[in-house]
Amino acid sequence: MKYILVTGGVISGIGKGIIASSVGTILKSCGLHVTAIKIDPYINIDAGTFSPYEHGEVFVLDDGGEVDLDLGNYERFLDICLIKDNNLTTGKIYQSVINKERRGDYLGKTVQVVPHITDAIQDWVMKQAKISVDDDGVEPQVCVIELGGTVGDIESMPFIEAFRQFQFKVKRENFCNIHVSLIPQPNTTGEHKTKPTQNSVRELRGLGLSPDLIMCRCSAALDASVKEKISMFCHVEPTQVICVQDVSSVYKVPLLLEAQGVVDYLCQRLNLPVEMRARKMLTKWKEMADRSDRLLEQVSIALVGKYTKLSDSYTSVIKALEHSALAINHKLEVKYIDSADLESTTLQDEPVKYHEAWQKLCSSHGVLVPGGFGVRGTEGKIMAISWARKQNKPFLGVCLGMQLAVCEFARNVLEWKDANSTEFNPETEHPVVIDMPEHNPGQMGGTMRLGKRRTIFKSSSSVLRKLYGDVEYVEERHRHRFEVNPELKHHFERKGLQFVGQDIEGERMEIIELKDHCYFVGVQYHPEFTSRPIKPSPPYFGLLLAAAGKLQSYLAKGCRLSPRDTYSDRSSSSSSPDMDVFELKYSSL
Image 1 (cartoon, helix red, strand yellow):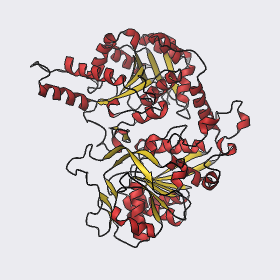
Image 2 (cartoon, helix red, strand yellow; image 1 turned 90 degrees about the vertical axis):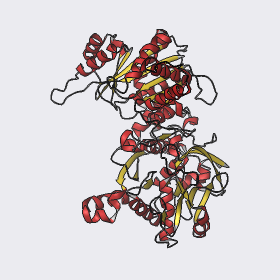
Image 3 (tube, one colour; image 1 turned 180 degrees about the vertical axis):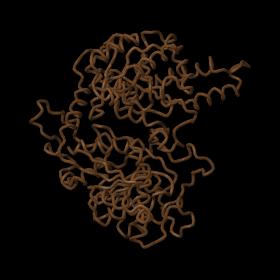
């Protein structure tokens, strides 16, 4: 087993997750089996109770693990399936050590950070690195480990010490350290400043880890003289200083690293069993990156949500939209709308903000209402859904978005004016959305309906069923405490709102579709978590097709895109993408 530790310096949020994912991608393109572990130094057991404004969205895995959004990057880049133990937190480590102490496993010894906590970290990493993350069940050969936060943080000290010991335990030829650091370029001078990186590397080396590669995050490419200066003061060769400048698409980052010899260095440094052959997988990434740069037609989607001030709150949603837009050859424009700005109270308090929000909504080609919690902004979301339904605009509601679509239909079509979710109004006379029996209101963490669940299609004419490839069922990831009230189902279906997907027992409503509408779909699950660059999520793909005016022709052709729809400006590129990459038949589902 080869271990690659990715640390960060100067500032947090520097892009360690994308770089760790990209390193894994270029190694996987060489035929290696790669897994990934994210270490978060916070004391929380998992990310389940975080506000999205803390660390961005909460990503959900097949096994129900609520984890950091970087695990979503790993899954999308490497096309692997991780489990909750691939996200390691200080809380998990201390909990496991304290549980051992209570059982008497330490034989009466004093339990300390060194060696007990550090040993527990090393054992966790070594155990988790061996668990297969690919469909073939093969044990991984390389484990990429991202250490969250910044070198020097008090919280991450036990992890740094653990890996200082770890490099000797697994031997030098099986461990290397990539340090990601910021190279600022102040506007006053216009030159790249290396001092923050020098200090960061000096601190890391003082803690016992010496970086093998220094990945320099910067706004523009570094000159050779800057690389030589970093090399001189940071005790590495100039070839070990890698420039990772801002690029137009994250698809380009693996190509950027590969072009600077990262694969060759890692193969030599870790003695990796790699055949230096044409890397087909990386070729596909290059084609995707080139295509994203050549897109001319634009499609705009209004994202009506509660956490729109931070785009990381909806990372997977945005990625799912991007994957689908790329597949239909359109440039994506996301219009972020704070749902509270659509409400009448905003018209009274801040009329300019109110009219701007409605102008954004009305000028969009499609409307997306993603998941969320809490009552703030829900009335604005219901207004947006009502507008999309009445104006025959493509609409997709995810989780809470689906529940609010049901509330909107109940109020305006069934004329149940107080229809609501018991989450927002426990006393409503028409509880169209109710809490689930297994929900434990006394404890917040890990008490939702989580993870991969099966949804059975109940209608052969369902649009979403056709988009999935006309399958009998789908398995998607869930994260919710409330559900549509099954006892009221027949009232909705009489008026045209069909519950085309239900759980195995037929008790939970999973998918809604509205008759005689261009595309009005709601899903209780989160399809964005399983969207991939070369296999977009069908609900999002349907939204983008409808927004671009191509859904009906796509369905009429048996759910296939014509070459003209799929590739733009083919004549401008000498190499056309493999047909299997962009053929959207979803037979694997």
